[in-house]
Length: 165
Image (cartoon, rainbow, N blue to C red):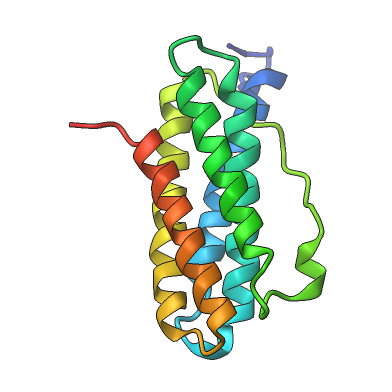
């Protein structure tokens, strides 16, 4: 709900502000992921961006789990796949050491869980696409396996959260 002060400006309630921040975080991490060049020299940067993107997926799915009885299992299984994808990427030899730290994300509060599911499905699809490409370019077998396996987990998140039909 918004409130219009005497000056005619629209102010967001704290809840709406948090919703905007969560959606912005998803958009920002997706833009960061998609901005990484598609060449072998950019593999460490791609791994770091994908790791952070999995962190956003994991946090938002966990935050959304208990908000709907109907969607609990969907978000819980998506969180599990996101956690596994993140775990797999942590094994990539080319992942910069500083990226191995856990990054806290903004609380993912969105009134409409279908909106957040759509945004997260889109992010998961982007992660998958970029990791499949990174796996093809990876010179190190450990990087190749990590990208391939993490891409599979991103595909699972996408399948779980994407609307069918």
